[in-house]
Each structure stands twice: as C-alpha cells, then as structure tokens.
Image 1 (tube, helix red, strand yellow):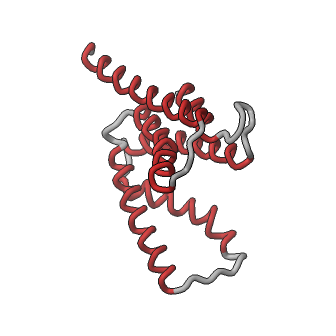
Image 2: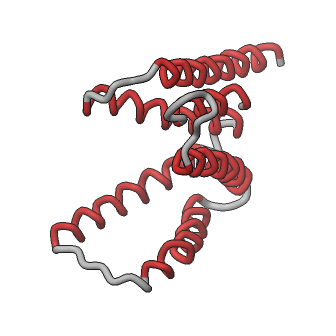
Length: 162
C-alpha cells in the first residue's frame, strides 16, 4: 500500500519530487480518505445491504455539500438539469455495484484497485486530450500497476497454499 501511495504521489506532484501543490495535496488526502472508506464499506457489507450503505453516504454527503450550497445562488438551464440527473443516476448505479462487489473482494485488493483510478485518468488524458506525460508521472503509474499486479499474484499464491 505504501509503494502504491508513493506511485500516486509521483502521479499528482506537478514539479519536482517534493513540489506538491495544495490541490495535489488535497487529492492525496482525498485518496487516503477514499481508502479508509473502501475498508469501511467492505466491513459494513458483511452486515448491511448496499442500499443502506449508499443511503448513509448520500445523507452524509448532502450535509457536507448541500448545506453550504444553499448559501450561494445557482441556476442551471433545463439541459443542465438533465445532465445532472443523468450523472446522478449513473453514479448511483456505479456506487451500488461497487458496494455490492466489495463483499466479493478483499479490502486490500479493493483499495489497490482504487489506486488505479488516477492511473486511468492519466491514460485517458493522454489518449483523449493529447496531454503530455512527464517521466515522473509515468514512473508513478508503473509503480501503481506493479503494486496491483504484485497483490493479485500474492493473493493467488496465498490461496493455493491454503
């Protein structure tokens, strides 16, 4: 996990090895919080249904995001509301599927799979938007991929031994 986190650090750090912007630091902290959430969801999935877990996440998220949003006026055209509703429906479906899947996967494997998200984001940025990739980002992405392969192979060998 530490090596994978180092890989993510290399992916998000924009400059030198120790030059991390405030935004990149927030992304790293968000990733760490997501890892904690994955472990919590994995534990909750043993006793609760995916619907209850997702509902609790929505209620907490509404309190964190919704209440401050009430202070600032906003306006969306009807097409914007349709897009937001579509995003909400797709993300709900994805979250329910992910929550259900955590009953079937070990917490370590699930956390490492979560580490793949920034790597895929980098790859999509290069493929779809023609973004350039720095050597440091490439090294970090490869480190994350190697960690995921290591855990997958280790788990497979461990299951065979037992």
